[in-house]
Structures are given as C-alpha cells and as structure tokens.
Amino acid sequence: MNVFFTRHIDPPYAFLEGEEAHHAARVLRKQVGEELAWVDGRGTFYTGRIEAISKKTVRLQILNSRSDFLERSFQLHLAIAPTKNIARFEWLLEKAVEVGVERITPLLCRHSERKQIRYDRLERILIAAMKQSGRARLPVLDELTPFGKFLSALQAPESVQKFIAHCAADPQKRHFARCYQAGKDAIALIGPEGDFSAEEIAEAKEAGFTPVHLGPSRLRTETAGLVVAVVVANF
Image 1 (cartoon, rainbow, N blue to C red):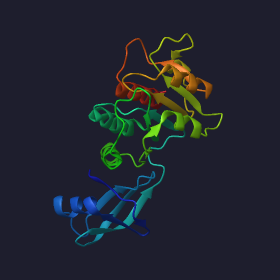
Image 2: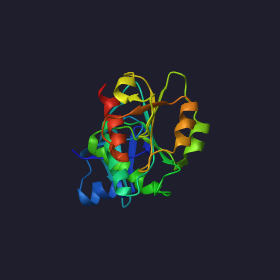
Image 3: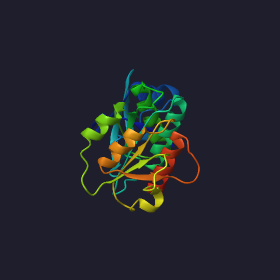
Image 4: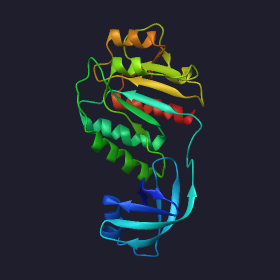
C-alpha cells in the first residue's frame, strides 16, 4: 500500500501538495473517489477519499484517523557525528526511522571529518523512510550542532538516561545493553570515525553521561548508532 505524507491537515480535509500530489495524480494516476492512506509526521495515520485533483494539489476527505500510531511510551535521542561518507549517515537515518528513534542531532566533534550536511536532503530521506516503514512519526532532525554547544544547551530531566559510547580505554565503561533501563527515555552520544576526543569524553562525564561500549568489536559510526537504536527498541 502506498502511504503519502502531508502536514496540511484541515479537518475534514487534508491536502497533498508538491511531489506528493504529483506522485498520486500523475505517477500512480489516482482518480477522484479512490481511497488513500497518509501520515502527518506527528504520529497520526489517516485514510480518506480523493475529492478533487488540481494541477498542484490533491484534496482528500478524511474518513478515519488513528493518533499515536506505532508510538512507544519512551523516547530515544540519538546525537551522532555524521560520517565522512554521507551515504553511510543517510543509511543510518533510514534505519533509525524504521526502528523508532524519536530525535536525531548531528554532532560536530573535534575529530569530525564531515563539517557540513544538507539538511533538506536528510529530511527527505527521513520522510521516505517513514512512509516506507509504515510509521507516522517523523523524527526531529536538528541542525549540525557543535559537541560543546550540545552539552551546554541540554536540558534533560533527571529521569532521562544519558550515555556516551566511545572506544578509548576506560575502566568505568560497561556494555550499553547492561546499563540501559527498558522503557525509559535515553540520550546516546556516538562519535565520528576518529572517536570522541579525551576532552569530549571528560566533558560528557561531567555532564552526567555514563560511558558505555557496544561489544568487543570496533564498530563504524553508523553501525554503533543502529546498535543503540535496536537495543532500545527491543528491550
């Protein structure tokens, strides 16, 4: 089943615009009277009927809606450095949507090799992954944020679990799966290919982040991000 995306909801109608309208009317050749499914990116799944098709818009009558569709009672905030090969980071974004990450902050770290991202492209990837995976919640995607600024601006309740996964020798490190408490909100920091610097690790610990590892192997950045997301999703 094709699932569309629109933020333009004005009950009892919704409106497909731009690429979504073009895909429905010109590519799939949907006609007035046919039923469609769509999501709003805020957690609601809709079904409805096409009422009108114009050059740039498809107007839909809402027949049914289901809020909090495939939602969970806790959230994972993944703060991760984009990879030098941006395709690997884009792959991670797709998988993060599929397993249910609620927020993603691209981090600019001392050892980061990628210092710019195309926000609009990354958001399109998230939208496509949301539709493909059957989810209705679009993860919040923050702008590229310097590591220090992220820590200083962070305002997380005491109940939120905070972790930093790094590869440096550290007697305090424990396996993430043994530290994470199921069903609770969490923030996880994942560094770039060159890992976090010693100063960044110290700053994170000072800010209350628990140092963790993800197993005996040294994982790629994008793999580490996915491992964290899967552990949280399946605990």
